[in-house]
Image (cartoon, rainbow, N blue to C red; front, side):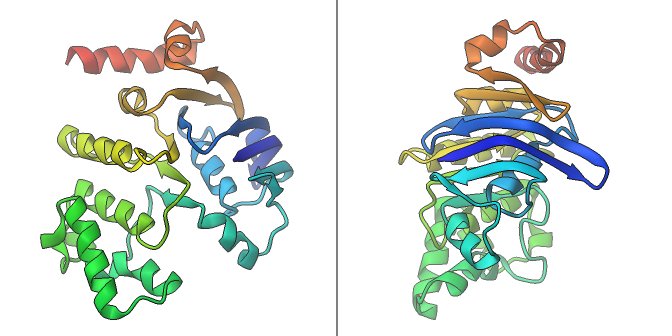
Length: 246
């Protein structure tokens, strides 16, 4: 479904990705690991055309997207559910209006149908009682749950893209988000999760990619990752053992 072929990208004079090549099928559960600034979130934004590569090709379902217009990219983006860490909800809109936004934008549902759909989605994640609250009134975990429900409101995505979905959350809230991610993938939809939290990655993913210096240092399964002798990966694995013993 997703194919990167020798993709490079820079922010101004600062190189982020360097000749990156990989492919991901729509039913895979992939964790992209690495330190801050190593290009993890950049990959997600390139997948849906929010950023354009400096060189190389990006294909979705075999179709190159590099030169597509914003209107053409809309057809690409509806294949994905995108939940980014920053700016997930509109601060000026209530929980109901946030979740209703894509329904009004992309469907022809009546207001009564929208209200019913929003309540159904919020009920699924235990937040129907928060329907009239504003984002500033929500805890971090509640905020993420609303953002995820908004991302699936109007479409049945073929793949989910999560940017640091549990960062900054307490263990209980992080557990709720992890269970929601797994629940949403039960129908066969895969996901790519960008994270620096190895514990959550191990719980969720079956394939692991490790970025460093704009390149993929590792791409494999859990057992191969645990056997890796790459120093940067050993550092990440130590986090897992610390959490496991905590």
